[in-house]
Length: 246
Image 1 (cartoon, rainbow, N blue to C red):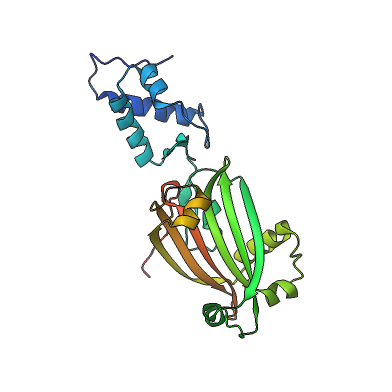
Image 2 (cartoon, rainbow, N blue to C red):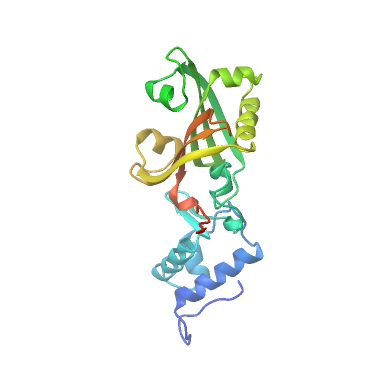
């Protein structure tokens, strides 16, 4: 291969040279977002360095958000798109917009339940109201990267003539709501360790860190339209927020 790195007669640490070479590969497109890098044994042999040296370079690449390591799956290349182009100050779909690698698939299920006490309060519903429960799992290269639990009043979906038998139709309406003008939100962002259900959905170990965005969305007339919790695997997301004093 090109750029073989020898362990003698070098002025910079070997792991830095490995890091710089792999970074250049990614810039040139040798490995694209979602691709899996060769195994560490293969790379160590390719660069003629020890496994310890190679792992130091991998850690730098992970810190820069260029790759992500997944147990049993190896090192996956992340996207180098500019996540600062938009921020959380604009309502959208953070699971798609802030993932460090392209989200290319989603799986949606929909169910219905009586409004809980919390949903009665948050969505301003009567006790007899029905709530649509929409679960959306997002994938990149067949790997789950995010999960959304969305609660919408059934009356809103019915009034908008959404085909509830068609998951694509439900998702299109959900995205339409997110991108509607005049929509505003009450939003909380926090971190939590994954419990069994979410760990299974996202195929991660229990106790791994998750970013959680919890919010209620309202129309410009203060009418609540949905409540949702978005769960994102922490190592695959970089959320930006532009702040400015008046």
